Image 1 (cartoon, rainbow, N blue to C red):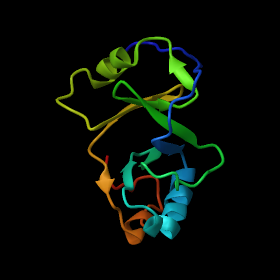
Image 2: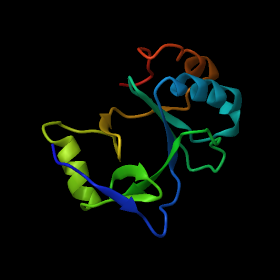
Image 3: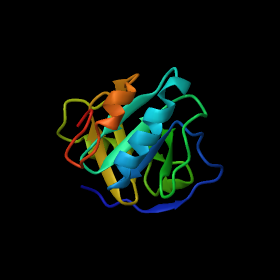
Image 4: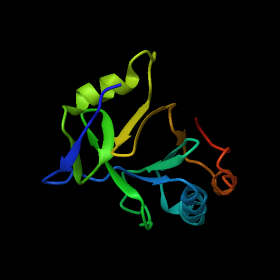
Length: 138
């Protein structure tokens, strides 16, 4: 794996999603569940340590400590930070040895590949994320 440094990005990327890490992911999933009807295009990816909500809508709720994500050459990354390597190279490094990935995310604290996001998750599905070992997509 390569080491990636991060610096300020100006101007910021447009928001396409939000990522919540750790124990807060179940809280954010519950928040989304309460508003699931506000989205026509909500897609959700859940890993063991994170939840990513993607939407073209500006209805994604703010959440303390969450990371707003933008798309940079096929790589989801923080809207206000830029990797010190080209995004396509970071994406390629994260994907190395994998056949394909629908979602590739990199932040200063982690990099991950994920299966295609769950489209239009139900409120019940989102509320089912009560423990860190549960997920919609891994």
